[in-house]
Length: 102
Image 1 (cartoon, rainbow, N blue to C red):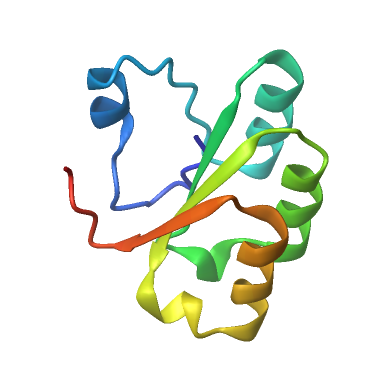
Image 2 (cartoon, rainbow, N blue to C red; image 1 turned 90 degrees about the horizontal axis):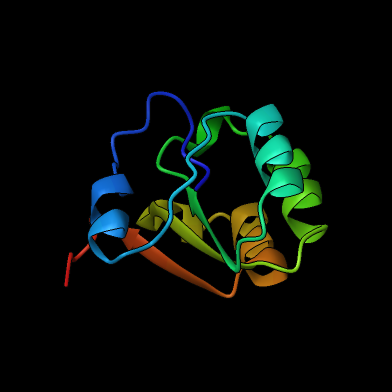
């Protein structure tokens, strides 16, 4: 799970309650290392503070994997053409904030 420092969304407990093995990272370097060391099938990108994220670098990292990526993001990012393109090119699914825990 890529969850940048300062993120207000904490999905770790929720994912673990669903019996998911969670490896959480807070920066691009940590994401690259985690992807090289783990055999995950699904990746989660928490993008609630997307302003501080280098979208192009993130796209390069996630596109090199075979993971199914799910993004969690504010509704306003869907209307941003560059983030919309990122979602289409890199993510199997997305959910907008606030999340419904069900």
